[in-house]
Length: 480
Image 1 (cartoon, rainbow, N blue to C red):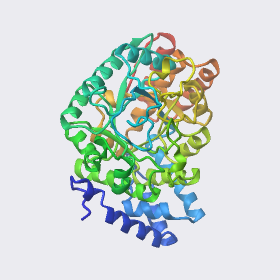
Image 2 (image 1 turned 180 degrees about the vertical axis):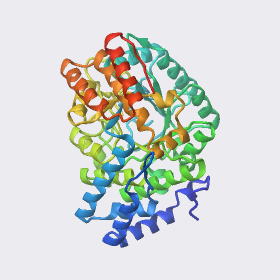
Image 3 (image 1 turned 180 degrees about the horizontal axis):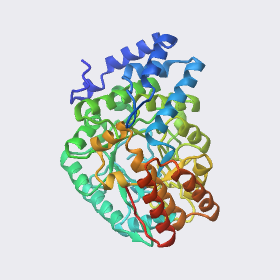
Image 4 (image 1 turned 30 degrees about the vertical axis):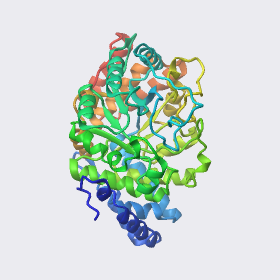
């Protein structure tokens, strides 16, 4: 029986409920009255303190995804953009992945790190190599990293991950600091999640890959990851261990996208029902080409148009979550996705172990083919050209505004009073320390425009003073 409050994977991601939901969505995909009611429910509403959104149930969201009426789809996109602007403004948080090791004991059929791949060179960074990678990332201007590693209890034990986290936080190079370390490693124990929490991680990220249990077990024929329940219940163990912020996602293309979408919505509902707070982030990766991996062998690839629609429906259904898109996607796709709800993107990414210290991007140990190879400065400049504020802010995490505290501020609309000035101040840091002359010029023109949008006079005046100190006094790390 479907039960969002259950702690058993097959009850909160219930196969029968997903199938019934898909049937309901198909039966109502042309029901204009119902679709209009769902969209009206989803629309952000202004209140004295800001805006509120109701979000949607998984069934309501599935109806929107199934809808093929052009005028309704256009309305979806507009509402998704309204929601994104209401809670996240025109800010886009910047991050980069840092690959620590590609040793792995799993046999995932879609990942080049699988244990049976004997063509890919295996590599694990030493702590000195981690340090050098961090310096290279700091020299680009990054402040937020997502650590990535294969699952291998011998080569990549939790102690190795903890050592790497400590190394990352210890590196202070010129004006560079990594201020938030997120971690994307395999499902583990409550005890190990406590260790990650104590090490000071930001978000714990784990993609489900697919919510279809039968497909999941077929795609993971051997290794610890074969255990569907253990993997699917990982976020509950992480939150039990005190990790406030968790990030979920599926790898679109492995299974039918409508099934995956409903499973993703049900997972978000489960986290809200049990822990009182939904996912901090939702990622939307697609299967991509890599060493020993041909995405064409999977029959469930989705078009760019469908991909955009999925993102819009996620934004509408789970309005307060951060949404992430990586350099798996090309520039044109990322631009379109920014319009319908994406709030975090990577820039200047290298998906190979030790890739940042190489002059040219290496391909031999990449986890996936990078479709957007632009430098961080090129991405920052592009965002500014498209009226998005590139934000390197990590203030909420460092001020303890995580989990339900972050969501309370977000849901009340008050988070903008912190995030907007913080974004502008961290952008000023980037412009002073790392930007090209053209990006610097455009960036300060944007800052001048955006400062005028801060409604609270004291906040605006403080932000202006801090930015002046960043420019003239070499001061750094201001935050609200």
